[in-house]
Image (cartoon, rainbow, N blue to C red; front, side, top):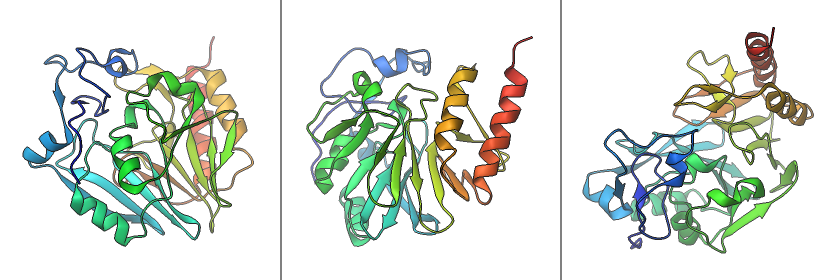
Length: 267
């Protein structure tokens, strides 16, 4: 493959449609402009610097896709392998022929879904490489940095991708912040950092801005809990390698929310 030289913000890792002096995603209070100022690269630039794709198992039926050394905020994506086809959850900035080949050997992609704008990465490069749609909640439409017909904007609280996969608009971190529920077996929740799996991997947390330490509003957390209530899940997959709640994930989310709301309550 020969990616076109669309600019990628070095701080958030999001690819833009054309050169520009600023990155609106980084200038928003939920992110930040790098201390050295706004800097840019491209997919080919990352390759020239020695970045390579990293593909490794992350759980039953789940394959992690990342970059080594890490780029931007260091997240990894996840390939969720289902009988109806593979869905890529979240996104990275890097892509090359070797990564494409490895993903095709795993069955390719039928769809991509991304939790929130900080993880949009090079989503259009991936969508074109695998000829598949990208599902984003309509509430985050204005943050799409490289508009393309591959992007499908959905509305409402939930959207079913397959019989076993459902997108849920939790609304934490961003208005369109979404998580993905997988109904296979004991169930799994793919949360990115909409529900952040923390260092003590028995817990998650909720923030409006992680780098700037702005807590999420209690009403938003309560709404997310209400939307998640009908869904059973044993595992919670966060946005970084091995950030996984391995068991009793539904209870972990409930007790984490109770702790969070207790600490942030007024009066």
